[in-house]
Amino acid sequence: MSAPPPAIQTRELRKAYKGRAVVDGLNLTVQAGEVFGFLGPNGAGKSTTVKMLLGLVLPTGGELEVLGGSPADPKIRAQLGFLPEQFRFQTWMTGAEFLNFHGRLAGLGAAELRERIPKVLETVGLAGRGGEQLSGYSKGMLQRCGLAGAILAHPRLVFLDEPTSALDPIGRVEVREIIERLRGEGVAVFLNSHLLSEVEQVCDRVAFVKQGKVLTQGSMLELMGGVIPVDIRVGALTPDLQAALERLGEVRRVDALNAGHTDLELWVSREDVLPAVAQAIFASGTPLYALTPRRPDLETMFLELIEDTPDAAHTTKMEAARA
Ligand SMILES: Nc1ncnc2c1ncn2[C@@H]1O[C@H](COP(=O)(O)OP(=O)(O)OP(=O)(O)O)[C@@H](O)[C@H]1O
Image (tube, rainbow, N blue to C red; front, side, top):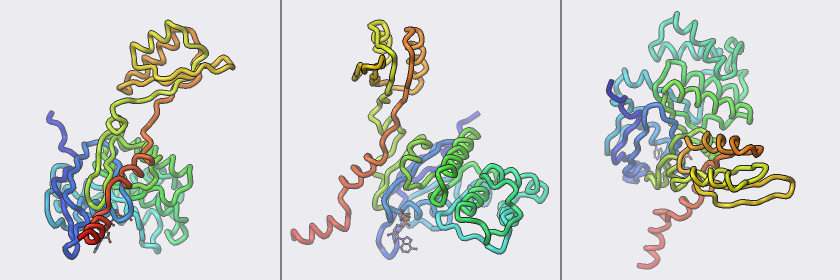
C-alpha cells in the first residue's frame, strides 16, 4: 500500500491584501496523522493561512494541497474539520440541533447522526447537555460544542484555532486528550495556540511564523538540537550504573544530595532509549525516584526567535532614516 499523501503541503504560498503580503512564501509540510503546532505573534498570518487551507480565502500565489487535493473539492472538504477561534453559533439551536445541522452539511445521514451526536458530545464532556439551547451554554461549553462539530464527520485533518481559549485547566487537559486520541486514530491536527506549554505537550512538530514567513520548523527533538536532556533522581550513582548510563547517553551533571538522593542529567539522542535507561537503573538495585525527559521550552524559543528577527516595518523605517 502506498503511503498516504501529506495532510498539508504548501509551496511559496502567498496572500496579499491591497498589495501588502500577509502570508509571504510559506512552505509547510504536515504529515498524515501528525499533530502540528503553528505558532507566531498576533498578525503573523496564521488565521489567513488556515482560511486558505480550508478554501475559504483564495491565495494570491503559490500552491497548496490538503489530503492530496484541493480544499475546493467537496470530497476533500468533507474530510476537514474546523474549530474557528471566533465561534459564533446559531444560539437558538440546541447543542444537538447544531451538530445535526453541521453533520447534514458534511453529508452524514440521519441514522448515522443519531448514533454519532451523543458520542461526540460525550467525547467533549457535554454528555447529556445536547438538549439545551446554545444561548444558555457557558463560553467553555460553546467551545466544547464547536470542537464536537469539528470532529463530528470523522475528519482526516482538523484545524483547531485556539481550541482551549475559553476552557479551565481541566478542560484544557481534556482537549489535549482528545487531540492525542485523534492522533491515535491517524487524524492530522493543525493547532494554532498561544498556550505554548500546551503546544509543547501535544505537538509532534511545530513551525514558528512571523510576518507570513516560516522562521523555523521541526520536530521537538530537532528544535532541541538533537538531544533530549533527562532529569533523573536515584538513591545512589554507583560506578557500574554510571558506566551503564554512559553506554546509553552522556552523563552531563551529577549532584549528590544529602538525603540519600543523587540527581543527574543524562543527554540521550532518542526517546526510545528511555526504557533502557529505566531498565539499567532497576538492574543496578538503586531506587529510582524520577526519570523526566525535558521538552523544549517553546516560550523561550518563541521569544528569542521573534525578537531576533527584525520587523519588516521597523527595518523599513530604519532604512528610511538612514537614507
Ligand atoms: N480580509 C482582510 N483584509 C485586509 N487585511 C487582512 C484581512 N484579513 C487579515 N488581514 C491582515 O493580515 C494580517 C494577518 O492576519 P491574521 O488574522 O492571519 O493573523 P494571525 O497570525 O492569525 O493573528 P492573531 O494571532 O492575532 O489571530 C493582519 O495584519 C491582518 O490585519
